[in-house]
Every structure is written in C-alpha cells, then in structure tokens.
Length: 213
Ligand code: AP5
Image (cartoon, rainbow, N blue to C red; front, side, top):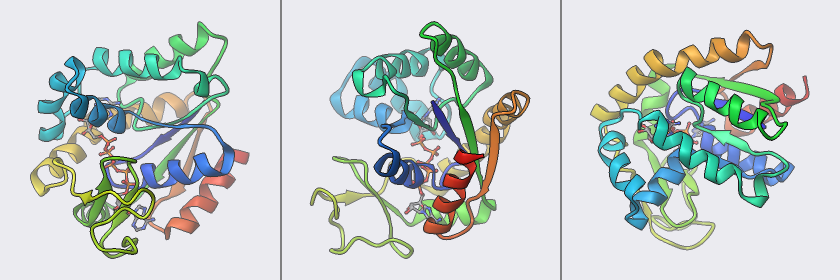
C-alpha cells in the first residue's frame, strides 16, 4: 500500500493518476470519494459537504468508514495508491490496524513538498472533471479544447473549495493536523520526500525513484 502525502495543490492527484497508469494499482483519493458521495446525495456526502467547502477536515470516523469500504473492493486487493489519506495521526493508526487485520501494511509513504505560494497558484488555476476526476491547469496543463475534459469529453469546472479563503484554511489545517502524520511514517522508516515544485514529469521521476529506494 502506498501513501502519497503533501499540502493541498502540491500535485498528489496528478501524480497518483500517472502512477496508477504505470503500476496498475488503483488511485484511491478520499477527496474524490467524498465529492462523489456528495454528488450521489448520500448521507456521508451530505455530512461532509459543509466541512469540505470551508476547507476543514471531514471527521475521522466518516473518512475511515469510506476508505475501509473502498479498500475492501477487489481491485484494491493487491494494494492501492492512497491520495489524501491518512490526514491525521488517528487516521494513520486506523489505517494501520485495518491493514494489519488483513496481513497488509503501508509499504511506502511519499511526501511531495512545495512552497505555499506555488500551491495557491496551482489550485486557483485548476480545472477538474466531475465525471472522471481528471485534473488540468489553465496554464501548466490546459485541456486540448477549452472547458472540455481530454479524457471523457465532459465539462470542466472549478472545485467549490478552490477559492482563496478555503485554500488558506486548507493550508492551516494541513500544518496543524496532517504534518504530524509525516513524523508517524518517518519514525517507521517508511517516508521518502520528493520536490513537488518541479515539472510534472520531473516529479514523477522523483516519485518512481522514491518507490524503489
Ligand atoms: P482533496 O481533494 O484531497 O484536496 P487536497 O488535499 O486539498 O488536494 P488537492 O486535490 O487540492 O491537490 P492535489 O495535491 O491532489 O493537487 P492536483 O494534482 O489536483 O480534499 C478536499 C477536501 O476533502 C479536504 O479539504 C477535506 O475537507 C476533505 N478530505 C479529503 N480527504 C480527507 C481525509 N483523509 N480526512 C478528512 N477530510 C478529507 O494539482 C493541483 C493543480 O496543480 C492542478 O491544476 C494540476 O494540473 C497542477 N499541477 C500538478 N502538478 C503540477 C506541477 N508539477 N507543476 C505545475 N502544475 C502542477
């Protein structure tokens, strides 16, 4: 099981999708699962919505239940690329117990790092496809046809939490709640760091290197 960590907008989703195509393990993004739950009108989606729009973390018990259901699906039996989970030490401990029950474990945690002002630019220029979760950027990775997803042809949109106020809250939440998870994996010798401020392809090379060492 691989864990991809880093602040909002560092490129976790972009890199996880590339890694899925390369190694065949599914990308499991709690952000995408929660957004899908909101679109479906499920109870979890309704409860999560207010937290997400404000840039705050959805309560651990909701997210842990969601990830457990997802990791029990057959395509995740051989492992998965976890994107945006765990985000608190309690979530990291819950993941460890959940995997241990099935004789599984986290094999590597990779932290993508980048300067805060760069992530704000990345997030404010992001376009996402609500149908297939593909991610674009108005400048660094524009779609071939403006406003249209290259992968599935659906309409691209900005996420409801991609505004300056929510971004500031997401960064503060990351520092307070998620940075301690870095120490959790470092103390187990599982953590590697990759400079996420490089081009998408350079980051991907660094990520592949981090998985092999
Ligand atoms: P989530 O969807 O996980 O958002 P996030 O962590 O804030 O991360 P992002 O999706 O914003 O960024 P990313 O790192 O994936 O970057 P991306 O590849 O898109 O979570 C949203 C919300 O859901 C949370 O705030 C919370 O409320 C809730 N939630 C989710 N998981 C939770 C959990 N475990 N516990 C509790 N609550 C949870 O790239 C960003 C942009 O930059 C794109 O436009 C991309 O094209 C561009 N880009 C990417 N790489 C590069 C590059 N190298 N150079 C230039 N541009 C680049």
